[in-house]
Length: 488
Image (tube, rainbow, N blue to C red; front, side, top):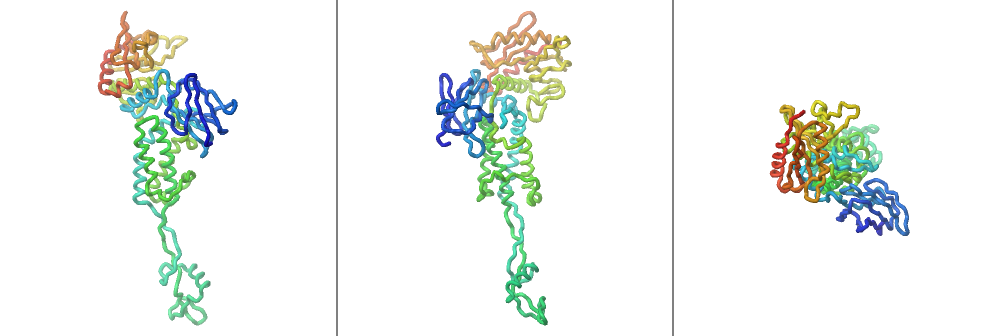
Protein backbone atom coordinates (compact mmCIF):
# COMPACT_ATOMS: atom_id res chain seq x y z
CA UNK A 1 0.00 0.00 0.00
CA UNK A 2 2.93 2.30 -0.58
CA UNK A 3 1.20 4.29 -3.37
CA UNK A 4 -2.16 4.53 -1.64
CA UNK A 5 -3.98 7.84 -2.08
CA UNK A 6 -6.84 9.03 0.14
CA UNK A 7 -8.87 12.13 -0.74
CA UNK A 8 -11.89 13.83 0.81
CA UNK A 9 -13.84 15.98 -1.63
CA UNK A 10 -16.45 18.62 -0.83
CA UNK A 11 -18.10 21.14 -3.17
CA UNK A 12 -15.64 23.95 -2.48
CA UNK A 13 -12.57 22.10 -1.23
CA UNK A 14 -10.58 18.87 -1.43
CA UNK A 15 -8.01 17.30 0.87
CA UNK A 16 -5.37 14.66 0.25
CA UNK A 17 -4.66 12.79 3.48
CA UNK A 18 -1.30 11.38 4.56
CA UNK A 19 -0.76 8.53 7.05
CA UNK A 20 -0.91 9.75 10.64
CA UNK A 21 -2.38 13.05 11.82
CA UNK A 22 -3.50 15.53 9.16
CA UNK A 23 -3.79 19.24 9.94
CA UNK A 24 -6.69 19.90 7.56
CA UNK A 25 -10.09 20.86 9.00
CA UNK A 26 -13.00 19.43 7.01
CA UNK A 27 -16.47 20.96 7.12
CA UNK A 28 -19.18 19.03 8.98
CA UNK A 29 -21.19 18.06 5.93
CA UNK A 30 -21.18 15.11 3.52
CA UNK A 31 -17.91 14.41 1.76
CA UNK A 32 -16.83 12.09 -1.04
CA UNK A 33 -14.16 9.64 0.08
CA UNK A 34 -11.85 8.50 -2.72
CA UNK A 35 -9.34 5.65 -2.37
CA UNK A 36 -6.79 4.85 -5.05
CA UNK A 37 -4.11 2.15 -5.32
CA UNK A 38 -5.44 0.10 -2.39
CA UNK A 39 -7.84 -2.84 -2.37
CA UNK A 40 -7.99 -3.19 1.43
CA UNK A 41 -11.18 -2.76 3.45
CA UNK A 42 -11.97 0.83 4.46
CA UNK A 43 -13.12 1.88 7.94
CA UNK A 44 -14.30 5.26 9.24
CA UNK A 45 -13.97 5.49 13.03
CA UNK A 46 -13.73 1.67 13.04
CA UNK A 47 -17.03 1.29 11.18
CA UNK A 48 -16.80 -0.41 7.74
CA UNK A 49 -17.40 1.81 4.73
CA UNK A 50 -19.10 0.36 1.65
CA UNK A 51 -17.06 1.40 -1.37
CA UNK A 52 -18.00 1.31 -5.05
CA UNK A 53 -15.62 1.31 -7.99
CA UNK A 54 -15.60 4.30 -10.34
CA UNK A 55 -12.86 4.20 -12.97
CA UNK A 56 -9.52 3.63 -11.28
CA UNK A 57 -10.78 4.59 -7.82
CA UNK A 58 -13.09 3.36 -5.10
CA UNK A 59 -15.49 5.97 -3.74
CA UNK A 60 -18.08 6.36 -0.98
CA UNK A 61 -20.10 9.21 0.50
CA UNK A 62 -19.54 9.77 4.22
CA UNK A 63 -21.77 11.99 6.34
CA UNK A 64 -19.89 14.27 8.76
CA UNK A 65 -22.94 16.28 9.83
CA UNK A 66 -22.63 17.23 13.53
CA UNK A 67 -19.41 15.23 13.69
CA UNK A 68 -16.98 17.85 14.95
CA UNK A 69 -13.90 16.23 16.41
CA UNK A 70 -11.15 13.77 15.58
CA UNK A 71 -11.80 11.01 13.05
CA UNK A 72 -9.83 8.15 11.55
CA UNK A 73 -9.92 6.50 8.14
CA UNK A 74 -8.24 3.11 8.29
CA UNK A 75 -7.25 0.83 5.42
CA UNK A 76 -6.95 -2.86 6.23
CA UNK A 77 -6.80 -4.48 9.63
CA UNK A 78 -4.18 -5.83 11.98
CA UNK A 79 -0.48 -5.01 11.70
CA UNK A 80 -0.67 -4.10 8.01
CA UNK A 81 -3.35 -1.40 8.46
CA UNK A 82 -2.71 2.28 7.65
CA UNK A 83 -4.51 5.07 9.54
CA UNK A 84 -5.31 8.61 8.39
CA UNK A 85 -6.52 11.00 11.13
CA UNK A 86 -8.28 14.29 10.44
CA UNK A 87 -10.44 16.90 12.18
CA UNK A 88 -13.89 18.20 11.29
CA UNK A 89 -15.45 21.54 12.22
CA UNK A 90 -19.11 22.40 12.65
CA UNK A 91 -20.81 25.53 11.42
CA UNK A 92 -21.52 26.37 15.06
CA UNK A 93 -18.03 25.91 16.47
CA UNK A 94 -14.55 25.18 15.23
CA UNK A 95 -12.27 22.62 16.84
CA UNK A 96 -10.44 25.30 18.84
CA UNK A 97 -13.69 26.50 20.44
CA UNK A 98 -14.67 22.97 21.39
CA UNK A 99 -11.26 22.40 22.96
CA UNK A 100 -11.66 25.68 24.84
CA UNK A 101 -14.89 24.43 26.42
CA UNK A 102 -13.15 21.20 27.43
CA UNK A 103 -10.17 23.07 28.88
CA UNK A 104 -12.36 25.55 30.78
CA UNK A 105 -14.42 22.76 32.31
CA UNK A 106 -11.38 20.73 33.32
CA UNK A 107 -10.15 23.71 35.30
CA UNK A 108 -12.99 23.02 37.74
CA UNK A 109 -13.89 19.38 37.16
CA UNK A 110 -12.03 16.18 36.35
CA UNK A 111 -14.39 15.37 33.51
CA UNK A 112 -16.86 16.49 30.95
CA UNK A 113 -16.53 13.37 28.86
CA UNK A 114 -20.26 12.96 28.38
CA UNK A 115 -20.42 14.85 25.05
CA UNK A 116 -17.51 12.88 23.59
CA UNK A 117 -18.73 9.65 22.06
CA UNK A 118 -16.01 7.15 21.23
CA UNK A 119 -16.61 4.46 18.65
CA UNK A 120 -15.43 0.93 19.31
CA UNK A 121 -14.44 -1.64 16.73
CA UNK A 122 -18.07 -2.47 16.04
CA UNK A 123 -18.83 1.17 15.25
CA UNK A 124 -21.08 1.65 18.28
CA UNK A 125 -20.50 4.52 20.68
CA UNK A 126 -19.14 3.28 24.00
CA UNK A 127 -19.35 6.21 26.38
CA UNK A 128 -19.16 4.30 29.67
CA UNK A 129 -16.01 2.45 28.65
CA UNK A 130 -14.25 5.67 27.71
CA UNK A 131 -15.26 7.49 30.88
CA UNK A 132 -14.04 4.62 33.05
CA UNK A 133 -10.82 4.41 31.05
CA UNK A 134 -10.05 8.14 31.34
CA UNK A 135 -10.53 8.15 35.11
CA UNK A 136 -8.62 4.91 35.54
CA UNK A 137 -5.65 6.28 33.60
CA UNK A 138 -5.67 9.49 35.61
CA UNK A 139 -5.78 7.62 38.93
CA UNK A 140 -3.32 4.85 38.11
CA UNK A 141 -0.71 6.49 35.88
CA UNK A 142 1.48 7.69 38.77
CA UNK A 143 1.31 4.30 40.53
CA UNK A 144 2.22 2.43 37.35
CA UNK A 145 5.19 4.73 36.72
CA UNK A 146 6.39 4.31 40.32
CA UNK A 147 6.20 0.50 40.14
CA UNK A 148 8.03 0.32 36.82
CA UNK A 149 10.80 2.64 38.04
CA UNK A 150 11.19 0.57 41.23
CA UNK A 151 11.51 -2.63 39.20
CA UNK A 152 13.92 -0.93 36.80
CA UNK A 153 16.10 0.06 39.75
CA UNK A 154 16.06 -3.40 41.34
CA UNK A 155 14.53 -6.13 39.18
CA UNK A 156 13.54 -9.41 40.74
CA UNK A 157 15.27 -12.68 39.90
CA UNK A 158 14.46 -16.33 40.24
CA UNK A 159 16.86 -19.08 41.28
CA UNK A 160 17.36 -21.94 38.87
CA UNK A 161 19.52 -25.03 39.60
CA UNK A 162 22.60 -25.56 37.46
CA UNK A 163 24.89 -28.61 37.51
CA UNK A 164 28.63 -27.91 37.81
CA UNK A 165 31.87 -29.85 38.44
CA UNK A 166 33.44 -29.56 41.86
CA UNK A 167 36.18 -31.35 43.78
CA UNK A 168 34.16 -30.85 46.95
CA UNK A 169 31.13 -32.89 47.78
CA UNK A 170 29.10 -29.97 49.10
CA UNK A 171 25.82 -29.85 47.25
CA UNK A 172 26.49 -33.28 45.76
CA UNK A 173 23.95 -34.45 43.22
CA UNK A 174 24.19 -38.22 43.53
CA UNK A 175 22.27 -39.11 40.40
CA UNK A 176 24.24 -36.71 38.20
CA UNK A 177 27.53 -37.83 39.78
CA UNK A 178 26.70 -41.52 39.22
CA UNK A 179 26.01 -40.78 35.56
CA UNK A 180 29.29 -38.88 35.36
CA UNK A 181 31.29 -41.80 36.81
CA UNK A 182 29.69 -44.28 34.41
CA UNK A 183 30.75 -42.04 31.54
CA UNK A 184 34.22 -41.29 32.97
CA UNK A 185 35.24 -44.14 35.35
CA UNK A 186 38.81 -42.87 35.53
CA UNK A 187 37.59 -40.19 37.93
CA UNK A 188 37.41 -42.83 40.69
CA UNK A 189 40.45 -42.69 42.95
CA UNK A 190 41.30 -45.28 45.60
CA UNK A 191 40.73 -43.98 49.14
CA UNK A 192 40.72 -45.71 52.52
CA UNK A 193 37.58 -43.80 53.53
CA UNK A 194 35.95 -43.81 50.11
CA UNK A 195 32.23 -43.91 50.05
CA UNK A 196 32.09 -46.14 46.97
CA UNK A 197 32.97 -49.81 47.40
CA UNK A 198 33.86 -51.88 44.35
CA UNK A 199 34.92 -55.44 45.21
CA UNK A 200 37.19 -55.10 48.29
CA UNK A 201 38.43 -51.65 47.38
CA UNK A 202 37.02 -48.26 48.45
CA UNK A 203 36.95 -45.36 46.04
CA UNK A 204 36.18 -41.68 46.08
CA UNK A 205 35.58 -39.66 42.87
CA UNK A 206 38.16 -36.98 42.22
CA UNK A 207 35.40 -34.83 40.72
CA UNK A 208 31.67 -34.75 41.41
CA UNK A 209 28.67 -32.89 40.09
CA UNK A 210 27.01 -30.38 42.41
CA UNK A 211 23.74 -28.50 42.06
CA UNK A 212 24.06 -24.72 42.52
CA UNK A 213 21.44 -21.96 42.33
CA UNK A 214 21.83 -19.35 39.61
CA UNK A 215 19.87 -16.07 39.54
CA UNK A 216 17.97 -15.59 36.26
CA UNK A 217 16.13 -12.42 35.29
CA UNK A 218 12.35 -12.67 34.77
CA UNK A 219 12.23 -12.23 30.99
CA UNK A 220 8.59 -13.28 30.59
CA UNK A 221 7.39 -10.96 33.36
CA UNK A 222 9.29 -8.03 31.86
CA UNK A 223 7.80 -8.79 28.44
CA UNK A 224 4.36 -8.63 30.02
CA UNK A 225 5.10 -5.28 31.68
CA UNK A 226 6.43 -3.85 28.43
CA UNK A 227 3.34 -4.97 26.52
CA UNK A 228 1.11 -3.49 29.25
CA UNK A 229 2.90 -0.11 29.05
CA UNK A 230 2.73 -0.16 25.26
CA UNK A 231 -1.05 -0.59 25.31
CA UNK A 232 -1.51 2.17 27.89
CA UNK A 233 0.76 4.62 26.06
CA UNK A 234 -1.06 4.07 22.76
CA UNK A 235 -4.43 4.88 24.31
CA UNK A 236 -3.08 7.77 26.38
CA UNK A 237 -1.58 9.36 23.27
CA UNK A 238 -4.90 8.94 21.45
CA UNK A 239 -6.76 10.71 24.25
CA UNK A 240 -4.09 13.42 24.46
CA UNK A 241 -5.04 14.50 20.94
CA UNK A 242 -8.43 15.48 22.37
CA UNK A 243 -7.40 16.81 25.76
CA UNK A 244 -4.11 18.67 26.14
CA UNK A 245 -4.04 18.01 29.91
CA UNK A 246 -3.26 14.36 29.14
CA UNK A 247 -0.14 15.11 27.12
CA UNK A 248 2.29 15.18 30.06
CA UNK A 249 1.20 11.87 31.63
CA UNK A 250 1.04 10.32 28.15
CA UNK A 251 4.68 11.29 27.56
CA UNK A 252 5.67 9.91 30.98
CA UNK A 253 4.05 6.54 30.31
CA UNK A 254 5.54 6.33 26.81
CA UNK A 255 8.96 7.29 28.22
CA UNK A 256 8.93 4.26 30.52
CA UNK A 257 9.31 2.02 27.48
CA UNK A 258 12.93 3.19 27.18
CA UNK A 259 13.81 2.05 30.71
CA UNK A 260 16.90 -0.11 31.23
CA UNK A 261 14.52 -2.83 32.32
CA UNK A 262 13.52 -3.51 28.72
CA UNK A 263 16.96 -3.36 27.07
CA UNK A 264 17.39 -6.33 24.78
CA UNK A 265 13.70 -7.26 24.89
CA UNK A 266 12.05 -7.47 21.51
CA UNK A 267 8.47 -6.14 21.22
CA UNK A 268 6.09 -9.00 21.90
CA UNK A 269 2.42 -8.15 21.47
CA UNK A 270 1.40 -11.65 22.55
CA UNK A 271 3.02 -11.35 26.00
CA UNK A 272 -0.26 -10.80 27.81
CA UNK A 273 -0.85 -12.01 31.34
CA UNK A 274 -1.96 -15.62 31.61
CA UNK A 275 -4.57 -17.07 33.93
CA UNK A 276 -2.06 -18.10 36.60
CA UNK A 277 0.56 -15.76 38.10
CA UNK A 278 4.19 -16.73 37.85
CA UNK A 279 6.40 -17.44 40.86
CA UNK A 280 7.82 -13.90 40.77
CA UNK A 281 4.35 -12.34 40.43
CA UNK A 282 3.27 -14.27 43.53
CA UNK A 283 6.43 -13.52 45.51
CA UNK A 284 7.25 -9.90 44.52
CA UNK A 285 4.45 -7.42 45.35
CA UNK A 286 5.61 -5.00 42.65
CA UNK A 287 5.13 -7.52 39.86
CA UNK A 288 1.92 -8.76 41.44
CA UNK A 289 0.47 -5.25 41.63
CA UNK A 290 1.25 -4.58 37.98
CA UNK A 291 -0.54 -7.81 37.15
CA UNK A 292 -3.60 -6.58 39.10
CA UNK A 293 -3.49 -3.22 37.33
CA UNK A 294 -3.37 -4.98 33.96
CA UNK A 295 -6.50 -6.93 34.92
CA UNK A 296 -8.22 -3.66 35.94
CA UNK A 297 -7.18 -2.10 32.66
CA UNK A 298 -8.66 -4.98 30.66
CA UNK A 299 -11.92 -4.75 32.60
CA UNK A 300 -12.20 -1.04 31.74
CA UNK A 301 -11.35 -1.69 28.12
CA UNK A 302 -14.07 -4.30 27.79
CA UNK A 303 -13.67 -7.22 25.45
CA UNK A 304 -10.56 -7.10 23.31
CA UNK A 305 -7.90 -4.48 22.80
CA UNK A 306 -9.61 -1.29 21.70
CA UNK A 307 -6.55 0.93 21.47
CA UNK A 308 -7.32 1.55 17.80
CA UNK A 309 -10.97 2.19 18.60
CA UNK A 310 -10.59 5.39 20.60
CA UNK A 311 -11.66 7.95 18.05
CA UNK A 312 -13.76 10.93 19.06
CA UNK A 313 -16.84 12.11 17.27
CA UNK A 314 -18.74 14.90 18.94
CA UNK A 315 -22.21 14.05 17.75
CA UNK A 316 -23.81 17.30 18.87
CA UNK A 317 -21.73 20.36 19.59
CA UNK A 318 -24.58 21.93 21.53
CA UNK A 319 -24.29 19.11 24.07
CA UNK A 320 -20.67 20.04 24.71
CA UNK A 321 -21.73 23.59 25.47
CA UNK A 322 -24.65 22.44 27.62
CA UNK A 323 -22.33 20.33 29.73
CA UNK A 324 -19.79 23.16 29.94
CA UNK A 325 -22.47 25.61 31.09
CA UNK A 326 -23.76 23.25 33.79
CA UNK A 327 -20.27 22.79 35.22
CA UNK A 328 -19.77 26.56 35.31
CA UNK A 329 -23.10 27.16 37.07
CA UNK A 330 -22.16 24.61 39.73
CA UNK A 331 -18.77 26.24 40.18
CA UNK A 332 -20.29 29.71 40.42
CA UNK A 333 -22.67 28.57 43.18
CA UNK A 334 -19.91 26.63 45.02
CA UNK A 335 -21.71 23.30 44.65
CA UNK A 336 -20.04 19.90 45.05
CA UNK A 337 -20.37 16.92 42.74
CA UNK A 338 -22.46 13.99 43.90
CA UNK A 339 -20.21 11.40 42.23
CA UNK A 340 -16.57 10.84 43.13
CA UNK A 341 -15.66 11.17 39.44
CA UNK A 342 -17.14 14.69 39.36
CA UNK A 343 -19.33 13.72 36.43
CA UNK A 344 -22.72 15.39 35.95
CA UNK A 345 -24.21 12.09 34.79
CA UNK A 346 -23.61 10.62 38.25
CA UNK A 347 -26.68 11.56 40.27
CA UNK A 348 -28.12 10.87 43.69
CA UNK A 349 -31.49 9.22 44.23
CA UNK A 350 -33.38 12.45 43.64
CA UNK A 351 -31.56 13.03 40.34
CA UNK A 352 -29.27 15.84 41.51
CA UNK A 353 -25.80 16.04 39.99
CA UNK A 354 -24.35 18.61 42.43
CA UNK A 355 -25.26 19.61 45.97
CA UNK A 356 -24.31 21.84 48.89
CA UNK A 357 -26.49 21.58 51.95
CA UNK A 358 -30.09 22.09 50.82
CA UNK A 359 -29.05 23.44 47.41
CA UNK A 360 -29.16 20.93 44.53
CA UNK A 361 -28.34 21.21 40.80
CA UNK A 362 -30.31 19.06 38.35
CA UNK A 363 -28.75 18.60 34.91
CA UNK A 364 -30.69 17.40 31.86
CA UNK A 365 -33.12 15.33 33.89
CA UNK A 366 -36.86 15.31 34.56
CA UNK A 367 -37.34 16.96 37.94
CA UNK A 368 -38.84 15.01 40.87
CA UNK A 369 -42.41 16.06 41.61
CA UNK A 370 -41.48 16.97 45.21
CA UNK A 371 -38.98 19.51 43.86
CA UNK A 372 -40.73 21.19 40.94
CA UNK A 373 -43.70 19.85 39.01
CA UNK A 374 -45.25 20.91 35.73
CA UNK A 375 -48.98 21.54 35.80
CA UNK A 376 -49.31 19.02 32.96
CA UNK A 377 -47.74 16.21 35.02
CA UNK A 378 -51.11 15.27 36.52
CA UNK A 379 -53.02 15.47 33.22
CA UNK A 380 -53.68 12.63 30.77
CA UNK A 381 -50.92 13.98 28.51
CA UNK A 382 -47.90 14.94 30.66
CA UNK A 383 -45.19 16.98 28.94
CA UNK A 384 -42.13 15.28 30.44
CA UNK A 385 -40.04 18.46 30.28
CA UNK A 386 -36.30 18.20 30.91
CA UNK A 387 -34.88 21.68 31.58
CA UNK A 388 -31.15 21.84 30.92
CA UNK A 389 -30.16 23.15 34.37
CA UNK A 390 -32.30 23.73 37.45
CA UNK A 391 -30.91 24.79 40.84
CA UNK A 392 -33.20 24.36 43.85
CA UNK A 393 -32.72 25.67 47.40
CA UNK A 394 -35.21 23.68 49.49
CA UNK A 395 -34.34 25.58 52.68
CA UNK A 396 -35.34 28.93 51.18
CA UNK A 397 -37.92 27.38 48.80
CA UNK A 398 -36.33 29.09 45.80
CA UNK A 399 -35.04 27.93 42.42
CA UNK A 400 -33.14 29.02 39.30
CA UNK A 401 -34.40 27.62 36.01
CA UNK A 402 -31.95 27.75 33.07
CA UNK A 403 -32.01 26.78 29.43
CA UNK A 404 -28.77 26.46 27.44
CA UNK A 405 -28.50 27.30 23.73
CA UNK A 406 -25.35 27.12 21.67
CA UNK A 407 -26.28 29.84 19.17
CA UNK A 408 -26.45 33.62 18.88
CA UNK A 409 -28.10 36.11 16.56
CA UNK A 410 -26.39 38.65 14.31
CA UNK A 411 -26.09 41.09 17.24
CA UNK A 412 -24.33 38.56 19.46
CA UNK A 413 -27.36 37.97 21.67
CA UNK A 414 -29.49 34.86 22.18
CA UNK A 415 -32.06 34.25 19.48
CA UNK A 416 -35.57 35.54 20.03
CA UNK A 417 -37.17 32.15 19.34
CA UNK A 418 -35.18 30.65 22.20
CA UNK A 419 -36.72 33.11 24.63
CA UNK A 420 -40.10 31.54 23.86
CA UNK A 421 -38.79 28.15 25.05
CA UNK A 422 -37.78 29.62 28.42
CA UNK A 423 -41.15 31.34 28.60
CA UNK A 424 -42.77 27.93 28.09
CA UNK A 425 -40.82 26.48 31.01
CA UNK A 426 -41.90 29.37 33.26
CA UNK A 427 -45.57 28.86 32.37
CA UNK A 428 -45.35 25.09 32.77
CA UNK A 429 -43.66 25.13 36.18
CA UNK A 430 -45.41 28.23 37.48
CA UNK A 431 -42.26 30.23 38.30
CA UNK A 432 -41.82 33.94 37.66
CA UNK A 433 -38.35 34.09 36.09
CA UNK A 434 -35.68 32.03 34.39
CA UNK A 435 -32.60 32.42 32.26
CA UNK A 436 -30.93 31.38 29.05
CA UNK A 437 -27.16 30.73 28.80
CA UNK A 438 -25.57 31.30 25.39
CA UNK A 439 -21.99 31.76 24.05
CA UNK A 440 -22.14 35.52 23.74
CA UNK A 441 -19.90 38.33 24.88
CA UNK A 442 -19.81 39.33 28.54
CA UNK A 443 -21.35 42.67 27.56
CA UNK A 444 -24.39 40.98 26.00
CA UNK A 445 -26.45 40.95 29.16
CA UNK A 446 -30.13 41.77 29.18
CA UNK A 447 -33.41 41.03 30.95
CA UNK A 448 -36.79 40.80 29.24
CA UNK A 449 -39.44 41.49 31.89
CA UNK A 450 -43.17 42.21 31.83
CA UNK A 451 -46.41 41.19 33.58
CA UNK A 452 -44.57 39.66 36.51
CA UNK A 453 -42.33 37.41 34.36
CA UNK A 454 -38.65 37.85 33.48
CA UNK A 455 -36.16 36.05 31.21
CA UNK A 456 -32.47 36.77 31.88
CA UNK A 457 -29.81 36.48 29.17
CA UNK A 458 -26.56 35.05 30.57
CA UNK A 459 -23.64 35.14 28.10
CA UNK A 460 -20.94 32.55 28.81
CA UNK A 461 -18.05 31.92 26.44
CA UNK A 462 -15.32 29.35 27.04
CA UNK A 463 -12.63 31.70 25.75
CA UNK A 464 -13.60 34.28 28.39
CA UNK A 465 -13.43 31.66 31.15
CA UNK A 466 -9.96 30.58 30.05
CA UNK A 467 -8.73 34.18 29.75
CA UNK A 468 -10.04 35.22 33.16
CA UNK A 469 -11.56 32.32 35.13
CA UNK A 470 -12.12 34.10 38.45
CA UNK A 471 -13.73 37.14 36.83
CA UNK A 472 -15.97 35.01 34.60
CA UNK A 473 -17.14 32.85 37.49
CA UNK A 474 -17.78 35.90 39.68
CA UNK A 475 -19.82 37.59 36.93
CA UNK A 476 -21.87 34.42 36.46
CA UNK A 477 -22.45 34.14 40.22
CA UNK A 478 -23.65 37.76 40.35
CA UNK A 479 -26.13 37.17 37.52
CA UNK A 480 -27.39 33.92 39.01
CA UNK A 481 -28.00 35.54 42.40
CA UNK A 482 -30.46 37.91 40.75
CA UNK A 483 -32.46 35.00 39.34
CA UNK A 484 -33.58 33.19 42.48
CA UNK A 485 -37.36 32.89 42.33
CA UNK A 486 -39.85 31.36 44.82
CA UNK A 487 -41.00 27.80 44.26
CA UNK A 488 -44.73 27.56 43.52
